[in-house]
Length: 241
Image (tube, rainbow, N blue to C red; front, side, top):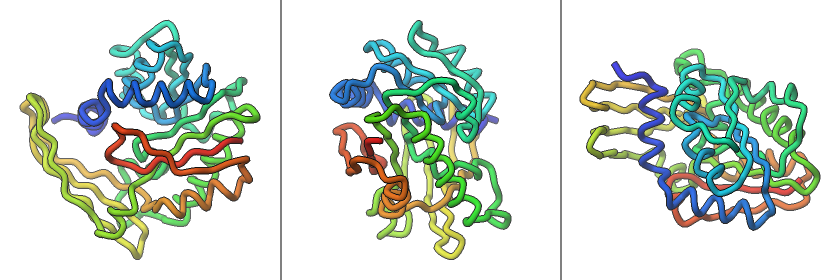
C-alpha cells in the first residue's frame, strides 16, 4: 500500500505546480529573500523550484521518507535537505532571510499519525507556539516569516469534501472538525498509482485568527494576510521580524 508520505507528496505536487512556484518566487524576491529555510519541506519539490530561480534553500523535515524522496528527486546546487524536527532548528548555526512553513504543515506539529483518542490539543497548541518561537529565532532582523493555515471558510462550514483526480491519483477526501478536541481530521480513500489508499491525517484545528494572535505575541514589526494567485487551499499569514 502507498505510504502516507508518498500520497502526500503526489497530491501536493498536483496542488502546487509551476504557477505556484513562480508566484512564490516573485513574492520572496520582492522582499529581497536570497536564503530561505523551509520547515516541513516534504519531498523538496517547492524548494527545487525556488532554487532554480536563484534562492538558496535549506529544507528540514522530521520524516525519514520525505527526506529520502527529496534527496532522490529534487536535488539542486542551491537546495539542501536535512532530516530534522523543526523544533530543533536551534541546532542550525545560521539565520535566514525567510523562514517558511506552508501547506498547513504547522498544524501537524505533533499529530501526523496520532489517534483522535490520544490527541492532546493543549500540547499541540504549545508546540505550535514553540515552533513559531523557533522560526523567529532563525530569522535575521527584518526577515520574512511565511506561514499558512486552513481558510476561515472551512471553519465556517465545519469541514469540506475534496476530490483529487489525475492519471495516477483517484482520491476522495472528507474533512471533519472535532470542535471539542480542536482536531481537524482528513480521511482519504481511493487509489494512488493503481494501489489502494486509505489514510487519515490528523492535525490541530488552527483558524487564521488564532494563528495571527500567536504570531502577534512575538511582537513582529509587521503582520498581514497575503494572497497568491495559485494558492487555492490555505490562508497565508506573513510577518516581518
